Image (cartoon, rainbow, N blue to C red; front, side, top):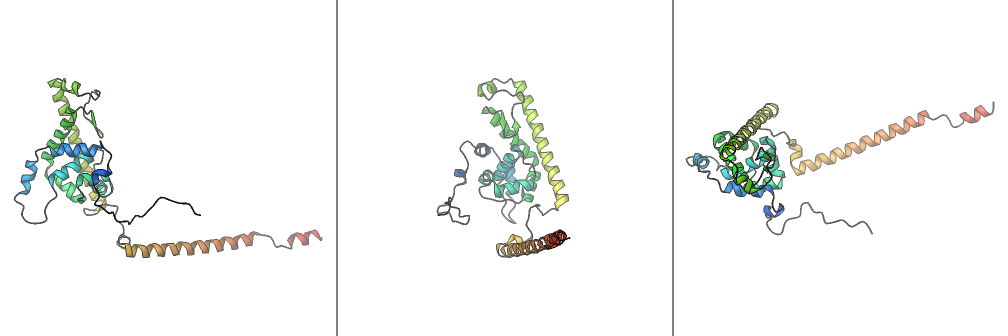
Length: 251
């Protein structure tokens, strides 16, 4: 009897609609950021869309804020990489609610709402620090490295609070500048509409992809056969004649 493996059916349909929330462990950073952003007043951002009645409906500003804040906190600055993570990473997919904004939409949202975005981002960091967090992803919320104790944060002097707030604002400025610089560099290298990880057209669709894979497999097998025959002929040429030893012995 052959080895028994666990069931593996990549194309199996789910019997019930999945909940992305159930795919993340309790206490995941994405939950905290999502709940925090939900408490923000984002009317200044939403108001910019109220009179835009033509064209496709925009992505919800709160969703875009969540994926941008989370991305920058976990060290992902490139809009192209953010778009890729939204497709592949459960935490990003949860924050996007199943939406898949293109990298150009992400970059344009940040640029369009840059001033408001930085203010809202700062609010998120300050709310997290107020809850006793000293770190949010890769972002240090307390430059003095105080232990995560809410009472110590409550006792922080007004002067030090302002100093820390200014430091966080500068850090956000640096994150946004870095993100813009990365996007500009990737635009020049890849073009304004390419993400950089796209498959060629004939490999992007399953029918033509399987055909190309079969052709590649046949080509590799044919090449291996030719190489094996060449190796065998080369070995035969290097071997001395079978009667060479016998003829020398009779001399």
